[in-house]
Image (cartoon, rainbow, N blue to C red; front, side):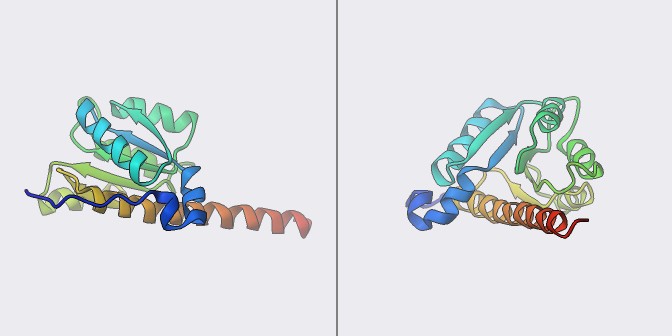
Length: 165
């Protein structure tokens, strides 16, 4: 697949307020191939500028989420011992982590694979090789929704405190 070179606009140049919000976000990238981890991290670093955590197995990903919840997870499907589908289902089945957006990133591209990703709770699905613009656009969009939900929850908690509930 031939792709055109992309112009890179620093995240802060597009919208300074949005860049500040997204800069505080944490993205967890899970893949058992080092090259994929490096590529996705570079795309996120250059286009979004938020903190990136890396996991090489599904078990490691679950441990990281339990210790310090990320704002979004980019999750490979084909991994040894625990597939991305299994990791996704575990995270979405837990009330404490079900609101974390999960983007499945995989070489699988059959309709059945997309259906299985959705059934396991994935919020989005990208096929490898990942298009940089598509990845960063989807991640930014899901991060914006995640940040807005956090703001809403904080505001509601404050309203409850002020009203004496």
